[in-house]
Image (tube, helix red, strand yellow):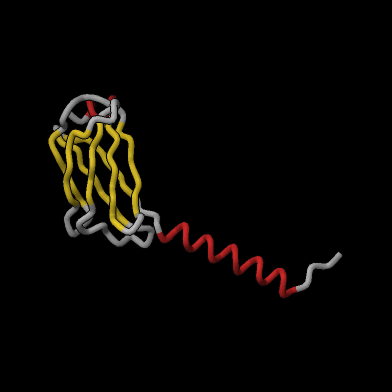
Length: 111
């Protein structure tokens, strides 16, 4: 049985529409520890930095340790609050949210 071209075209169009919606709410965050501080970098899939994004830092027990805001380059840094697994969350507004887990061993190595 051959599928008509218009049905195949409609299926491809619907797939592409949903893929675009999923990417529209994506934001990336990366973090690393060095010299007693933790540095974060936040950016959108197109490489544009997250300017004014809210950064929240939680310990392994989900206690909020630090709050801050990214600069125009999408960066935010802070003194290491404690040696623990840290969950670093970026909220760039309008549903753009993601997190990065920095392991305790990485935090300790960055002191």
